[in-house]
Length: 332
Image (cartoon, rainbow, N blue to C red; front, side, top):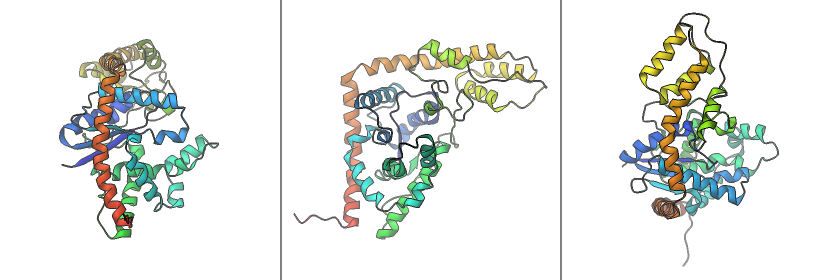
């Protein structure tokens, strides 16, 4: 069976963009592929979280994954730091990653600009760790957003380099995967690009937000003064809100507001009120399930242990092969 690997940093709470950009496809993948989904707590150390924050965020994301339908019996849902083989392979692969290519990484450049006082080695070698997360399970596919395509290409580069160096076919070249045939990008509410926590609290619709918070965010979303010509092309900020509506609203609702826009009769207040209620109707049952699971220590512990055991079994097989190829052989 073909293998799929993906993960999400434990940055607190999942939002609508995470769900439609990743989790929704995970639910389909776990039915048809051998899947490894991990909570990337090692990656998060580049931002120096406190122990309490890190543990709380991991707990939150684990509960959210489970509430959204990931099944520990169907997939390997694990916490990255529970699999020590990842850190070992990260060490080996760093020896074959070069300064110039790491410095050219778009994510590294972005982080340097945003946090010039925290340019640590982990940020520089971030693509290597991302590659290891994929290569250690010999993944065939990786569900990635458009902003992650460069990292996936770097993963293929590191895998090919190792294969060429040792004259083997140890690592396959993973491909981008999307159940719809295209990589989904959910827009944010502040017209800064895709929905993201880095865009500020007002940019993303979090599943764990209180309902009134969600309403206020949507009502404050960027709009313009309204259309002035029949059937005019929607500006990006307005199209973004319609794109979100397409994810959560009925076909009739979408067609209704699209028609109002095309005839210059749309009232953005009414449009955003409807969008807010449709978003809440979609989010509400998932939010309630998150709260229930998050308070169940036994269920969370069992799920994490089951996932770690599956991931360790896979990772250790790869690592034994890598150690032997490199030349690490014990004399005892």
